[in-house]
Length: 362
Image (cartoon, rainbow, N blue to C red; front, side):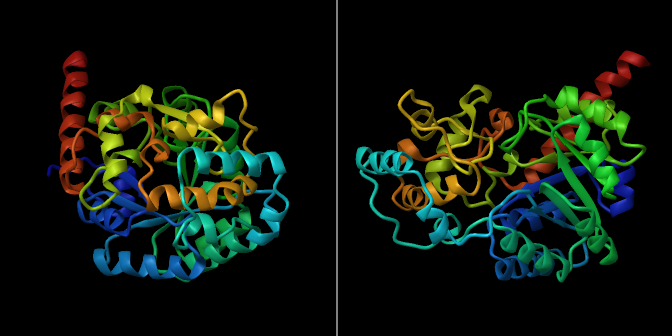
């Protein structure tokens, strides 16, 4: 693999400016070992699980750098899962019960994040504390951030990054002391905004005061990496691209849906978490957008409402309701391949695109 170094690569000691978000320990480690920068998504892990997962990544990558992504959203109630469920509106509970009957979904047999954990200030604080005690090189804030969290991370010699979806968030991140801006356009999978990547990135670069900017949202081809560099970004942040890698080991039903999907086969819905999330279209998103459906509840109440159903859908492979957070870059998820092969392909495509630009100006 030919290196493709930008200033942030030199700062972090990586070969290529490809940052990868994944909930998989194996993917995170494989990307770092392939010369990029793996970022482990810890949002679904209890504090004690966060520590264990980060230790596993460190063991796999040695002294190579990697990061972790957590959430610090504002306004979360300090309530247990049982307390949240006791407060759920009757019509919402009835609607979910109707989905269970319609799709013949049995009760979940196992405990998972969605039916055993609850997003609360205590949960997020526990995750943050666990990260700050771990051996990681970067702390990224996927949703929300605080100046205190940034300061604590800096005290542990961690670089800080924040995902932003609007230009106004750039200044807020800088005011909090964040060092790297991840400008995530609305094409992204997972929690996302409405401004496109092509519009958001150059505005973020203008406002960043010289801080490194990474482009995110809908990026799955090297020509988009070249375009991001041309806009002033120092690298890219990819998530969807890793879902169909060998290392991820996603359920076959989800892999099949991802491989069959194009950019028009994603939709933004609040039905899974309560916050806008881009995911693969399915009967799940269709049912929640139907005229008779109640409006999804805010986080974490929607999570408390549908958690057991989500777990059972995956346990029992209820294909019509099966979905996965994914961005419009799913169009480039065309086959199952290794993380290293994906990185090599992206670098080769980037170099071809950069050569095209060079020929135009030469």
